[in-house]
Length: 261
Image (cartoon, rainbow, N blue to C red; front, side):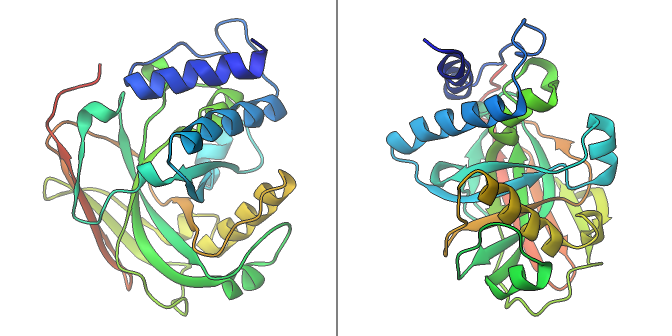
């Protein structure tokens, strides 16, 4: 078994069993960024083979503070598959995850293909709708700790997401207030401006990064632009709601079906 397949198998097994695994970077496996994206592509390909088609992409490190913390100077991206989508207002079992966290985001729905370098205005022309979103992130590594290559290989911690109602893309997105509550209590407050200053810049970055990997963002795909605040840890039974200025509400319930750890 070659290195890429070995790493992809490790992460796929960890995700399917909802059990944490050791970081590659602390286990004597120093992946390059190119190798890490190859691992990501391999493990997502297996999910597609099992019937979970690709329905979009997500962006990571769109917060300047997070990028500085990780010592990176560019964003990362991961794939979204159909089995990650949670119905707005619906529920998802806690036991599906290792140690889930949730972040408030902005989601874009595409009506035209996007690939390669584009301006935010060009990216906007490909947008059919914009919505408030909640992303459930879940590192497959122990203690939610990882290197840059580790997290890229792990599909940028992609695990689940919820989108609220879709709106026409004429809304000004640079400074909309966002409040994320857990069990009725506000836990994170922020602004869409924390997403690269404007979520449309993140959409343009998604086009650039995916295009460099030979991937075209397709009509009907969803693009998660990145977190507007820090993530919050989730527990069995938690109800999460996001209120976003001009965009409305998104919510889900984490059912208490047992811890994965």
